[in-house]
Length: 375
Image (cartoon, rainbow, N blue to C red; front, side):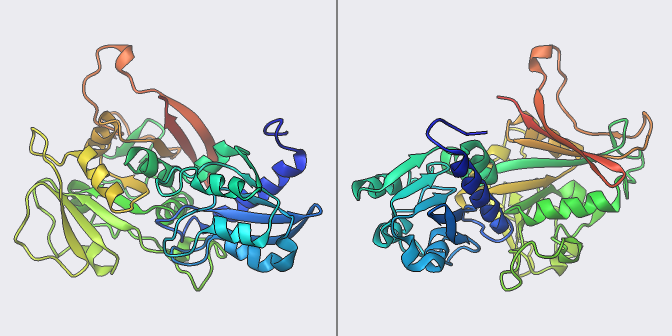
């Protein structure tokens, strides 16, 4: 299927390959976007590359190095507009100009304010044909967090839940290990690894005493280069009453921990701990929108939420959740078991949050449901 009359079947095939290259960086590029690049001459790939880690060469640079002199008069397929500014690396637009490429096919314009069309303009000013918009929807999905932070000043938020077939998350006494299977829990590790931050609440931490870390041994091999290990996601804990101290299991891991609070506590924290002061609501709770804006200002693109029903419901009611990810086990916990989310009383169907199913798949004996909030 051809994406647009501007593009050929070959264009589509090469861009699909570039998107696959870009996806290789999803565990290591934070806070940079995932970008893939393919250089084609005489309908043959002469160079390919992907961005692997912030501060290292961009996808275009890797592809140009492989192509060498064959980059002249070539067509370049890149999943995000080539940068036009000096950051930690030189502008990729200038590198493409210097190489003498003839055409650049771009999946989408970069929403980042320092690029935002300038790379495309610079290429065109030097006589290079630029065609933009091929497989843009797929490119946006690949970098949903980076794009949302650039466009709205907020991270992309995924709320994960594990539930029984009757929509319950724990027995009445609080016992919940384990509702879902080992396969589902391994799948959660993939999402953790691809996120900038893992968010939870003080109640969940005090009850379960989790580590909230990525466990590399549960990840499939070959997901990322061995010399570029996964950057540990920041663990963000909503601590309304300053309850979390230094005696928790999560401090046994060296990764950063940010405690979101409305008032500063004098209790000392372990070295990796930091208090994150945010606005307070009228109920003296952490203002969740202000928290998300603060996280975005600290280069957090994607937030993976593993919360209790109260905090999960509050995130939903604040309009901050972009995706629900529900792992549903073929078990029944009964009417007295704890529910999925605490939401305010709804009195009209017009108030009901509506989602659309993105995917439904089998994970071991369980079902994984991914649903996006409709706008």
